[in-house]
Amino acid sequence: MFLKNLYLRNFRNYAEAQVEFHPKCNVLYGDNAQGKTNLLEAIYLIATGRSFRTMRAEELIRHGQSFFYIEATVVRDMISQTVKLSFDGESRRLQTEANTYSSFHHLLGLLPSVLYAPADTELITGSPAVRRRFFNLHLAQSDPLYVHHLSRYWRAMKQRNCLLRMRNEHDLECWEIEMAHSAAYLYTAREEMTAEIKEPLAKAAQRLSGDKESLELRFAPSYQPDTYLSQLKKSRPREVQLGLTMAGPHRDDLNLFIDGKPARLFASEGQKKTSMAALRLAEWERLCRRVEGTALMGIDDFGLHLDAPRQQLLCSSLDQLGQVFVTTPDHFSRNGWKLLEAAHRIKIESGSIA
Image (tube, rainbow, N blue to C red; front, side, top):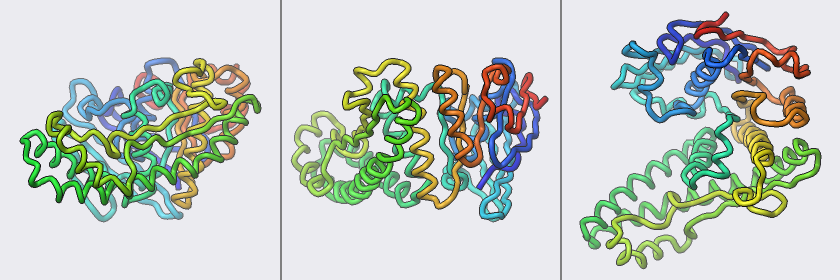
């Protein structure tokens, strides 16, 4: 599967642009603030239905305009499909070959993808909510039932929290049963993902660190699925006072360990960046296995992540991937990144495809 082409109108700093992509490595290059990351953001939006830079769709509209429009051709199993999405400041619209939707969520799974960006170190240093988003986006791209149970759990938990704030304990049980049912599925999916990513993560970490570091991901749930329902009932008196649910999938965490030590406490900046590169490569491998296809890989600001030796190690891994999108300043030819030199190069200049 791959993205064949993309058309943008009024998206970020692009008034209008059209670009063709190669099924393998594509390098988006140019000076800073020209629109390289904006183009990668549009690709990610097509793949996942969301931006990796903002939660506000209004920010994606070109300054002074009232809407943005994106059209893309996706090739999957040798079949081309046209995808169109737009936002006018109020309403979202997604159109595929056969259907029209009022949400971008239906894009999930159409073009599975992984993105490695400078902000990824927040997976180590940021709040548990950042790591839960990592869980959720990865699993949502390969498991429609995960999306169903995540939505169902959140709906039931919001109803329970509302009743807690009203100090109404009599009507809680039906929502708690629904929460426990979906929480069991979410727990299993997250636990399986953590276990399945263990081996590719260890291998990627060894490769990128030159066999100097080991890397491990550990799931840290806030509940046990077999006792969650009784836990909810037991915690009612305290949670009535707080007005919220204290344990469940919405409080789970994910911890990264380097050589057996918590990365959050002991990792250097270089180790954090290397760990994130290894995690994204491992995530890509697991996603490909789950969707039985080749996922996309995006790398924003290629030269910013790692020191020169580890850049070379990462670069040597790219030819083993499927379709890749790399953004980098106009100096890659001087850094000896031979694979990038041979890639399909797209120059970005002032919001245009030069």
